[in-house]
Length: 159
Length: 203
Image (cartoon, rainbow over all chains, first blue to last red; front, side, top):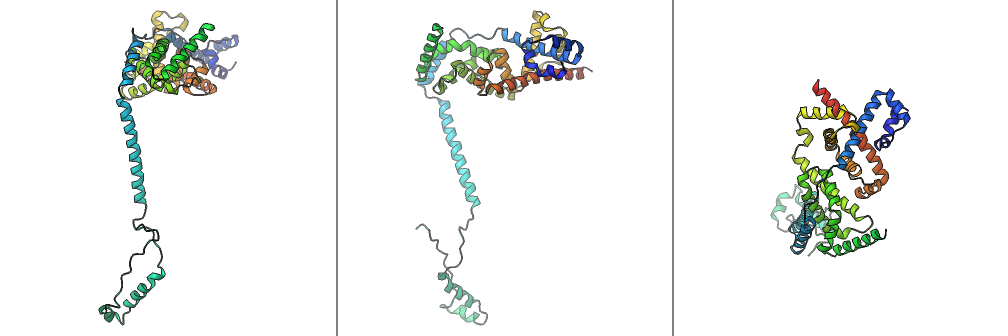
């Protein structure tokens, strides 16, 4: 028998299993003898603990408990109420946080699109307005004054 | 055999009535299993003054959850699962707020305890030394990781079988065996380390 065998047979030894080979090895190996001694002490300690007197229920424990259960059944449970409300509060907070994060993550200007054909005259007018030769005259003429192009209407805009 | 069959049928009746919300039907179940629950709570928590309160909370919790009991495992196993979880909730809360008993002991007391426990083989110990050995194991349990402590208490102190522990902890029996082996191994290693620590302090 080798030292490793002693460690591997821990559960067997814990339950009290011993053999002549084991005893022979323990007589020769002080490290294993120490390990085995510890093992016997701990397992004996557990046996002693399992046999000690444990706490016994006081007289009428079951009756008191049943009475208490009856009373709890009649009265609405405050703890349950708060638990339910608390859970809803947590869900609402989570939903609100998610929506806030979503709002912050999205661009504030909305979707951007290129110029459509309807925007072209306004752009041409803007180009004419920037002509350095006719600049002064154009500015005074109300017909040729640069027209502010309206914000492009979204196709799915909700009316 | 017939008697135990009749008792089982009676127990099923009580459980079904309790599932309908009848506290009176839960009473006989409390009577039947209260000692088992008290013992488990005491071994897990090790505080006599807390056992009855915790047992009461466990039975109330069990009554509220009894509709979820589906007769797949024995009632005592189901109840033990609730008790184990409840005790661990309690211990987590308690450990966060107080120093463990072992670390509250004076160094001299620790050394005395250890040297007494080591001075003689377990078989030859008298009543006083039995107490020392029990204290030693209690303190090793206090130092043990939660999962080790749980499985050692169920196996070594409550004498549940591997299969019953598997049901209580919702594990496979092979996993229970592995965890039990590791827990025992760690406890022995911890005992060695503990001794070395104290020898280091003494020098």
